[in-house]
Image (cartoon, rainbow, N blue to C red; front, side, top):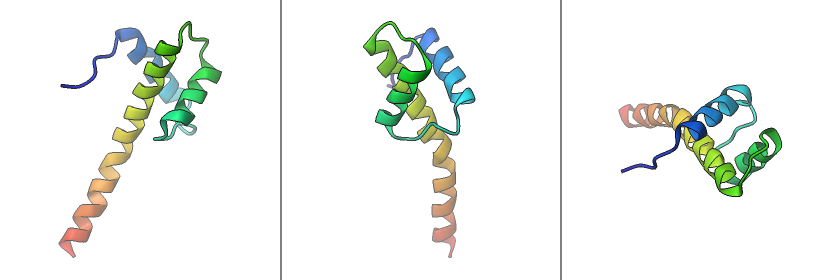
Length: 76
């Protein structure tokens, strides 16, 4: 069972991810600071959830490349 995110957190997270894709990393702390600078969030909990969602998306986006490299190494 995974985390359940509200519609607003997903919507805001996707917008930030698309606009600031070059600044987003797989490091949660850096993403948290980015969210703090970009969005005027009304609570720390919401800011952290958005940063967590963005971090998760960044990790998922980088995962297929790693899997492909591992498969190539196994084939050799």
